[in-house]
Length: 635
Image (tube, rainbow, N blue to C red; front, side):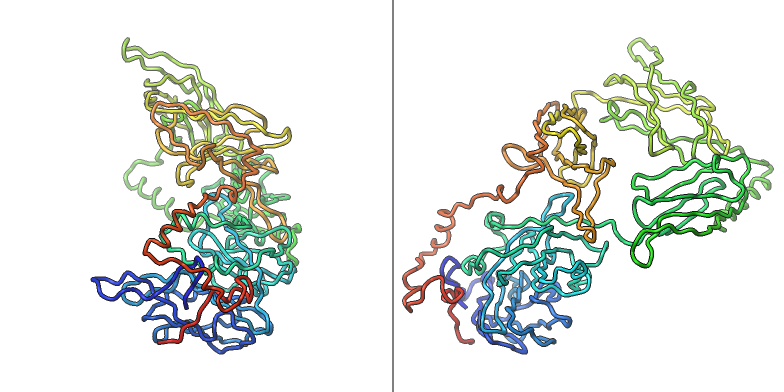
């Protein structure tokens, strides 16, 4: 098959040469491309040479899909697709081979190709284009299934096959081609088990709130255009209509997944979902005033510390919490729990005591050893962190000393500091001081500074602290504007790859944010519209038709998201929050130098004759673009 117009003149490559570098040439399809009133058992795509197809089950997409997958395999110098199910009546079918076809010997890829035919008298002629992004990184998602449903039921994406499907390419780009001019519900998900149904919580999901109606006619010159996989400029210059952002739902049934007793006083409850709602929790023989409750950031793990002087080895408890019932609704549920030390833990304690007795040491004195950590690059902001494995019952900052070491005068000077307890992490504390750069300090913990629920205290602990040379560091100063009076925004400084959150702060008003003491490197800034003001990003919920909390990256005025920071420099950025969340990547598509590409198309000396396209008298836009395609007989 030859593509005319701007689709390129495809001809068989020259013979000879040390290595074949010419991709396969498509000669014909059976039935013919865009044929109507066809219900074939199989279709054939014939090339000028032997080809191979890579991972057909994942890379070849037949739309609409069927319960029994068509079989795709090579046959002679071509590809054969055999249908296992009866084809739907009066339906336009597309078979998207994606980037799966290449020549057999050298693996030279054949450009993405989508075959079309209809079981009825009409070829549906509308199309939709778009891109799918990861909502939290805003990076394009490849190999995601994009689905259209004429069934608007809330359960359609779980229980029925879509009416139209497409798969995103390596750039997150998709084309839903040859569809009806009707209203569809549009959904995308990373179909991990390849069943064309969304599996709740196990797959990333994106969905449009409102119905979409295709309003563009298929442009065959564009959809058949050959774009080499290495032509990044042209691939990025493709316009598209829709942006879909995929996320992982925090959904599923809520229930108590696990409960354990660690030591004698730590009861841990682990739930299946975030935001566990515990109505009551009571241990027999222990007063409720003798409990201290600790939770993690997402409130799906709760720890109850028992502060009573006497604790039984085995504890009976009763809990009432909101659990998912048989109707998938949260309702109060009560159950009894039995907490008992794991046998392995009891055996280890017994062995330890026996060993001490045999060695004649008697009872070995245990002590409490807090962890003391800091990072030189952000000690000014974060200070020094103290962490404990057990719950402290008393903390005496007066038994903690911070001394500045003056190497010049060979003296030590005691420094004042402030002491902060973490509101969520009850076993974590921070020490802040007016640190001097390029200096040394000594931190001393005197005996009894910490006492935990087991009655253990710390011995004397000393730690050296060194602050860095300020000339090694740089700063990013951010001037935040455009924040509404009732708005809360989480601002995160990330690394270049968007995988690590280096700094995070919450702002509720227009202000200047200093990100100081940064190493030279490349950074990005992510903003989260924290609508429920819980200090964390919350994903969407499809059943409730609730979208995710908006996430966006700050784009520099000159373009791009990466902020390059040199050593010992300061960069100022003005960020209008309203503009950041109104960002539209479709307006950032780079312009293509058509003159340069026109020159590249004809640099081989072949000029395209447009008048020849119409010498049969057919208008260029009629007959669904079939005048663009000339069928050749197989060799």
